[in-house]
Length: 374
Ligand code: SIN
Ligand code: CO
Image 1 (tube, protein in one colour):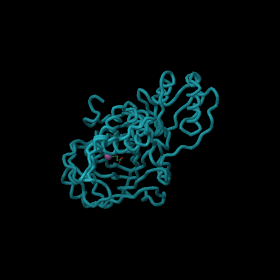
Image 2: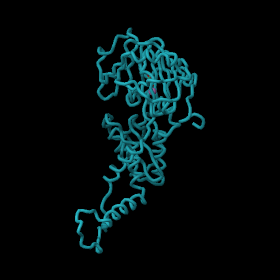
Image 3: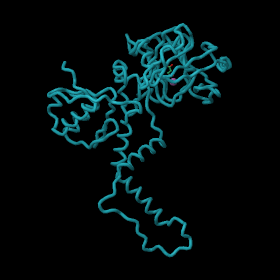
Image 4: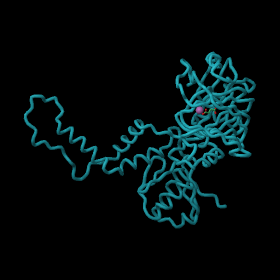
């Protein structure tokens, strides 16, 4: 983290020795058929093959790129023998336990920043073209080989009129061929181009969330505003010094001050803001839903469902877009659950009645499950 995170690329040979693809090709194609799974097919025709330098630019420009969004039937995928196509499946960690386990290895970065595991499957020469991302990414090769070319983003211009964002003047500075188990870390805004060398190339990308200031403010303010209630002693606007006016349409300055002070008063008590932040950060993605579960058996431990997002701060605990104030022993237990994603039967047995009831509710909502006795 000190040397590379958000600073410079890092190639780690055999970062995950003996890595196994979290899904087979057939399982991946089946996932792409589901409507609760985000998938994309990218087909390049007139494939120019790997380019070595800026001289390859004109060749790339002539290639024809097609993008199709899922869900897509297996039969609508190109034949396996056709080079130059790639299937990308997002949020694999929500559907495949092995991908969820892989994501857990990256929890040296706070959960608030972790996004998902995407997997790409490519036939020979397949790839998504030279591009950059706004977020950090770890690219773990899980089967086959892929040649990565990377370089700092000096010119962000994109090829015009293409269905995907392809850099028109990508200047790679380094290149490596990654074999299964090898991993490449890239900071945001680094140009990169990964081209499959041979068939059956699978790469897992662990991607991160990057809050954008304006979008985050909008979300926070909406949520915060929803929770505001008028106090028992409401502060009403008063204007005993308002003179008779000849400009009735003008907004009174005193009313502008009243509004400014109302907002400043809110900001002086940031509790609402921090609750809203935790709720926004743990809000499930749009097509995520939970299968209702059953009541917790007596005396069992619990583990969070792979879809549950759970975080905390000094005063609150957040899960799946909701928040609770927590203190003392219950808060310590909930933080342990959030950090480890499991609580042993012994710890659950020591929880207060209120916390046991909350865990029971979460079990019924499908947010957590009984921990299998080991
Ligand atoms: C890929 O796996 O083909 C693309 C991943 C990326 O460039 O972020
Ligand atoms: Co990328």
